[in-house]
Length: 284
Image (cartoon, rainbow, N blue to C red; front, side, top):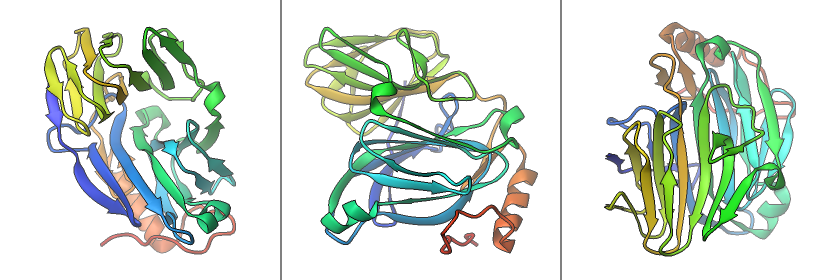
């Protein structure tokens, strides 16, 4: 197993841990970016406010454990997202979006905790149309037995299938394991990784430190054993159909697509989020 220790970052005042991408692991299945938004308390009048920014060649998926965010994009979507819900946005050739704490929550103060991941689009969808969908917590399938609760966020696995419209074979699940339980992680997906959010656990007898990403060897059933009550995320899927380049908010199989996207955003030649004027400028 490869163990990835995430690097700490701060995004608009929100502390995060980012295990993907890393020098030792650029992707796991379609997952090319993984942010753990650490539990963070916002005082009244304060919150997250990420202005308009662009994407190409990927899908973003936001999944919260606590708090709320408002998603707005250049397709006209304007959607609050709460705990256990999925906010899914496919960028295609060009999309812009905004993520912020909703006004009502901003006024009262709030606590935010969750995950945001990026999934690289297959080459045939890189320059396709953008898409947005929101999925309520009750829409996501759940298996709850023998002290182990599996909620399938996206893709398929453990006999479950999520309604989130992924573009390639994907595994993304939230796991809750009670003390002394064991979950056999099947090898139906070639690439898999476990991120331990909280608790004490081991993988085939090897201790897994909290807030680290363990990339599992392919073709093997791996046992996740809970030494205490555990909370984890499981990601994976089919390998990408070729290497990907990442530059700022852009993901592509061809560097020319990224260069063109950078030029377009810098020139203001990009779809706009309705009602929004602020934007994040292109880093130099």
